Image (cartoon, rainbow, N blue to C red; front, side, top):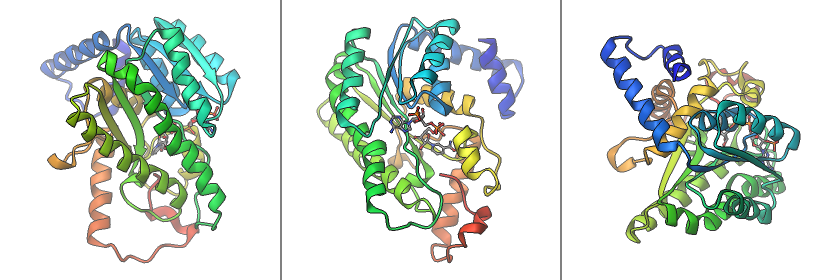
Length: 303
Ligand SMILES: NC(=O)c1ccc[n+]([C@@H]2O[C@H](COP(=O)([O-])OP(=O)(O)OC[C@H]3O[C@@H](n4cnc5c(N)ncnc54)[C@H](OP(=O)(O)O)[C@@H]3O)[C@@H](O)[C@H]2O)c1
C-alpha cells in the first residue's frame, strides 16, 4: 500500500491533505480487494507498461499469466511477480503475428488458471517513425500483431469472460484517435481497435453479456522503446510507466469504458488527459496545417 501512496505522491497532482489521503487509501484498498485472486492475462508483458502491469497485479495478489516473445525476459517477470505476492505467475512465449498462438495463450490460461477474469491486450509490434514508405507488407504484419491477434484472443476468451463477468482491457493510443504524421501503419492498427471494440461493447450490452471493455488512450509514456523512438522529438515530458500501468488496471477493474457519448474518454494518466485534450483541440481548430519535415518532429507527439 505504501508503494501506491508513493506513486500517487510522485504524480504531484494529489492534494496532500488528510481527507484526500483517506480517499486514496480507501480507493486502493478497494482495488486490492477487487483484484485479489483474479485470473489475469497480460500481453506484451516482457517490458514496458505490460511488465509494470504484471507487477501491480502481483502486488494485488492476482493470478498472472504473461506473454510476449522473449522467454528469458518473461522468466524474470514471473520470478519478480512471485516475489511481489502474486497468487500465481506463469508465462507463455510466442509471437502474436501467429493467430494460432494468440488463441493458444487463452487456452493455456483456461488450463493453468481454470478460467479468466481479465484480459489485458497491450502488446505492440515494431514500426517506424517516419513518412509512410509504401510497404504494404509491413502494414499487414502490424495489423496481424496489433489488431487481429487482439480480436483472436477476445473471441477465444469471451466464453470464459462471460462465465466470470470479466473484463477486456485494450491498450490504445492518441494515434488511434487522431491521425498524426509519421505513424501511418501504427495509427491504422490503433484506429481499427477503436472501431472493433467500441462496436463489440455495444453488442455485448444489447445481448446483456456481463463483460466490460475498457479502451485506454495513452499519450507519451517513459518506456524504453518510446523513449528511444521519441524522447528527443517530443516536447512534453513523458508520464511514468508505473503510474500509467496502475491507471490502466484501475480502468479495467472499475469497468470504465471510453464514453464519447458523455464526452469523456479514459486516459491512462491525468497529465495525459490534459495533453490529449489539447492535442485534440489543436487538430480540430487547425486541420490543414502542413506536415512538418520528418526531422522537425518537435511539435508533434508520440502516439
Ligand atoms: N510508451 C508509449 O509512449 C505509448 C504511447 C501510446 C500507446 N502505447 C501503447 O502501450 C502499449 C505498450 O507500449 P510499451 O511502450 O510498453 O511497449 P514496449 O515496451 O515496446 O513493449 C511491447 C511489448 O510487446 C511485445 N511484443 C512485440 N512484438 C510482439 C509480437 N510479435 N508478439 C508478441 N509480443 C510482442 C514485446 O515483447 P517481445 O519483444 O519480447 O515480444 C513487449 O513485451 C502498446 O499497445 C502501445 O501501442 C504506448
